[in-house]
Image 1 (tube, protein in one colour):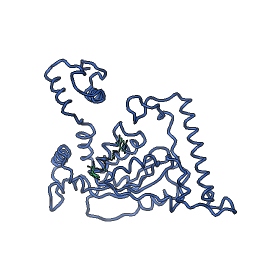
Image 2 (cartoon, helix red, strand yellow):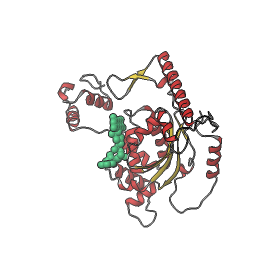
Image 3 (tube, rainbow, N blue to C red):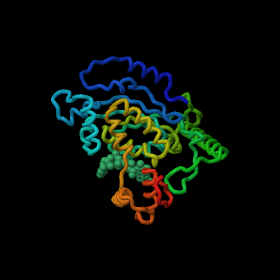
Image 4 (cartoon, rainbow, N blue to C red):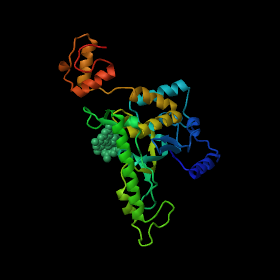
Length: 320
Ligand SMILES: Cc1cc2nc3c(=O)[nH]c(=O)nc-3n(C[C@H](O)[C@H](O)[C@H](O)COP(=O)(O)OP(=O)(O)OC[C@H]3O[C@@H](n4cnc5c(N)ncnc54)[C@H](O)[C@@H]3O)c2cc1C
């Protein structure tokens, strides 16, 4: 695993050691991890390269204050809780974060759907991509899920998993050989053949598979970051993007601990219910016997409700 090279590490160390004075709000937690790569998957990472604002900036904006705007921590916490619970979102747009992300192309393809961010991607028209591709670990290789058509089911037998990884490795290496031969350039930047002139980078790259790594700088405000995290840390999201979301959640906790707490409480740990589900639960609380067939809920919604509230998911009529 080589998430960053020695040269890249040296550049990071140099910037970390630069000191600057500011009277802006700064986050002690985030400052402690600024610029440092947080490994994700086999070669990927996220690292915070810049940020604006803290929990205090949210409070300051919500109170439209002339000064720092903050009061006692308990009052600030109550205000942030209130804002999150009531979807009063604009104060959270006052804080922003800029991440450097190294991620497989198939993860990037899901990530880029979040349009409310600013992105600058590494250009493989201009530069040559490294020989870095993602291989899932054996315990993350599952069958096609039978109920969730988008998802991964239980783990496959070890032999089938090993065969998959070995075929994926061979295909990725072969694709890299194709890439280098097309460019007519070896890893040291020397021509592979003196008889060829080499194909343009923008064309040579098109034979690389989706597990190759790309990189980008990604800037987003806190409100939209929470939208991204709500969707991508959820168990319905693909495992690989979820691992990035989990790493960003750790960053969020360091950056804006009060917001993180309120977000975990009211959004990540909360539940969204349909009118039918609410009506059904009301009947339960009134002590009425219930069956799934009476609930008018689809099997999928019923199962989700059962999981959230801890009753048996099949068709049953008893609370656990
Ligand atoms: C589990 C899962 C499965 C998915 N499966 C698929 C799939 O099969 N196929 C597929 O194509 N995508 C799929 N997606 C992507 C999904 O449909 C969204 O495109 C993606 O999650 C980005 O969400 P968003 O639009 O809320 O985010 P953002 O683009 O960041 O937008 C945030 C919010 O801003 C507003 N907004 C942004 N742009 C506009 C606009 N142009 N017009 C109006 N409002 C706007 C909306 O309120 C939006 O919710 C999937 C996502 C998840 C999490």
